[in-house]
Image (cartoon, rainbow, N blue to C red; front, side, top):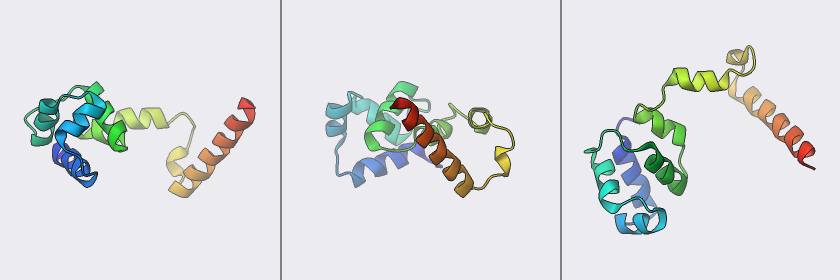
Length: 109
């Protein structure tokens, strides 16, 4: 994501929403949204980015990375709770996550 502001603007436009509509539904000010989209705000508040990411249903971690709030070290630290996970492919990760979800559901019952 080279230009996160333009990315957010493209998502908003794909959803057919104006800046005022996003403001009304999220509480993030319309002038703030414009500054983020235009790139005049280099480091928007993380809370506002989270609100927009949730509203647009986009990956918050990728957005935080694009703005420099997180980097690969932060991400890898969170993902390394088990040993040797770096040797697994995406399908294996997905299968293991499915098993974890199944166990968590059984515990919740």
